[in-house]
Image 1 (cartoon, protein in one colour):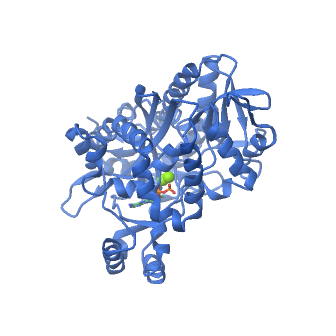
Image 2 (image 1 turned 60 degrees about the vertical axis):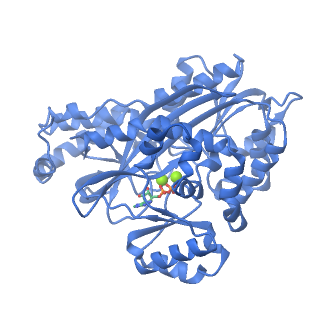
Image 3 (image 1 turned 45 degrees about the vertical axis):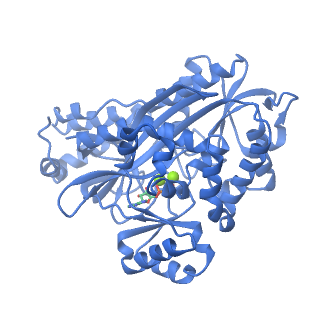
Length: 479
Ligand code: ADP
Ligand code: MG
Ligand code: MG
């Protein structure tokens, strides 16, 4: 066990000369290891790149909680899959949401359309990331609490595969060589690629390609490339395309094989399509429907996408609901439930009224969440009161769910960002765990926890991820 405590880490942090020296080494090392992003100015060119933002030091995470998060991941994989396979549950759970949330309604429409058809493809590929914070209770205990599970476009598995070497090197330069042993190896890029490769093999055509469906702004392309290159190593061809490419040249043949620019598509890997703004035209929606109807394996398929909504998360936390998905596995239920924070419905009726009253009485204890992804959408503090005072008698409130606010203990660290001066910050971290699974018909043929991600942000920001420019990449330092 390491001798590194918060206090020791802090002692090193405040020696300014040492920090100045390490800052440059840290940035160079990130560049050497490929922890890269394209610049805001030239997101679609590799001519000028920079390091992806990261913390100078890894953040202490209790070993037991870290392992708890890894151990529950294959259960979350199965839970997501089972939810996605339960039309009655999805329909009932999302019924109130889709009446008022147009984006979820449009996704749900696609779901209904393909439900009514014969589905040509029985292979399902799920690549998700379950995110947690460590909740510090007033009695001094710390527990692992799930923030959400991302079932579409979960990012940073690529870059997270390269950050451990960077932090280990920094610790050595900072004269903390033993601590560097407490930064674990991590390779979600390889694990995500194993899932993709398994699904590609099952699709069964050597010529068929994996299509990464990507945004037009490609700042985070190196994160994708790590996964992509793992596939090429296995001689699995990869192409990158955007919605508009699929609109322009996508088609289905008589057996509903998907072709884009003349390539048969074995897998559509969505790294886009999770926000309303990603659908810039009606044609984008038509393209999503066409891909969904096709023989290609969708990662995720529309039902798995819906299984990742915050409304579904809230419903799963209701009493007795997990038991419906794991009727013979009380231990699985207990393991999953142990990670749930309080989640509350805002559906019309007595329960929802109670939630409104609770939130209005203590807004600082909650987070109000719409059905959105990508960071920066949640509502906190007094703004919760403003929103709920306005919406409390309207069905519009059912677009949201309410969640207990997790209260982690802030840790001091430096955040390294291109162009920004170095500053000691009080920081909060979020641990992500990557899951990958492949099902063929009724058989789960692959189900793994494939790595982790730690993201850290200054505690002055309530919300927002790395892509949103708020959080930075980090590593757990097991203590
Ligand atoms: P998104 O899908 O947009 O990432 P999240 O549910 O992950 O939505 O919320 C975004 C961010 O808001 C999280 O990364 C976290 O920093 C913060 N957050 C979300 N839920 C909570 C919570 N219950 N307690 C504290 N912070 C939260
Ligand atoms: Mg999300
Ligand atoms: Mg999130």
